[in-house]
Image 1 (cartoon, helix red, strand yellow):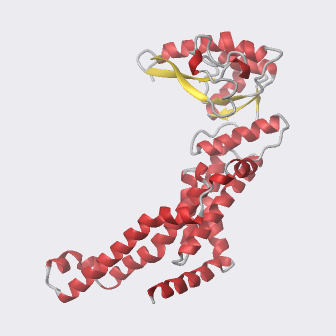
Image 2 (cartoon, one colour; image 1 turned 45 degrees about the vertical axis):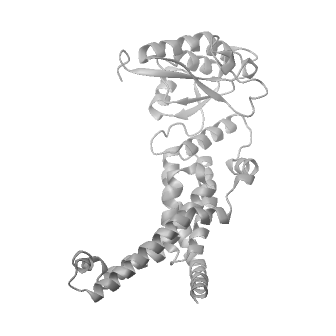
Image 3 (cartoon, rainbow, N blue to C red; image 1 turned 135 degrees about the vertical axis):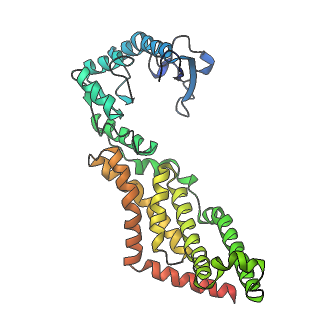
Length: 340
C-alpha cells in the first residue's frame, strides 16, 4: 500500500461517555453515539474520516495519544484488556501499546508478526492466549480465542457453549425448516432423474437419433446408472447434512460445510442419516474447537483440526455404531411405502 495515494476509512464505535471516557472522538457526531439505554442492545460502528492512508494513520495516532492513552492510564479506567488485529506496534499503535504495557493490561489478537514485534518493542507487554492466527481461520474461531484468552487473564469463567445455549435457543431452526431449505435440491434431483429416464427410454427407441448421438456416452449402460444413483443416494444426504450443520452451527462458516460434506459420506443413501450427521457435526464443532483453544493450540491449527477431523469422526461414529445402516433401512422402508 502507498500511504500517499491509497485511501482508507477510519471507523469508530459510537457508544457514549458512560462506557469509558474517550471511546469516541470528541467531535464525533452525538446523534451517532449510542445512548446508555441502547448500549446493551447494539454497538454501532460509524465511519469517522476517509482520506489518504498517511493522513488517516496520523489521525489515529492523535486519537490514541489524546484520548486512548489517558483512558488506559487513568486510575478509574474501564479498559481491562486490548484486542489487536494486525496492529502497527512501532508507529500507529505505539502509544496505546506502550500505555498498556505500563498498566500490564492483557493483550490478545491476531497477526502473529505484528504481535511478536509488539512484544519486542514494548517491554513488559502482557500477551495472553493463543496470539496470532490471522491466516486460515474464521471470525468465529478468532472471537472464541480472544474471549477465552481474556477470560483466563481476568480469572473469569467463559464458555461459548453456554452463551450459545442461553442466548439464541429460541432462534434454532426446526426439522421442518431444515427440510424446507433442502426442498430445491430434492426437486432438482427428482426432475433431473426423471429427464434422464425419459431420455434413456427415447434413446432405446431411436438408437440412431440425435439424442443417442449426443447422450449415448452419458446414459449408456453403467454410466447412466451411476449418475442417477449418485444423485439419488449421495447428493440428497449430503445436502441434508450440510443444511442441517450450517443451520445449527452457522457461526463456523466454511469449516462446518467441509466437515458436514465429509461426514455425509457414511450416510448410505439415507436422508435421515444425512440430517443426523449434520446434527452431530454442529454439536461436535463447538466442543472440539473450544477444547483445542483451551489446550493452547493456536487458532490456525485449531481451524485445521476442526475442519479436517470433525467430519471423519462423525462418519466413523455413525458407521461403527450402526446408525447409518439402521437409518438407511428406515429410509428405504419409507421410500417403499410412499411408492406403493
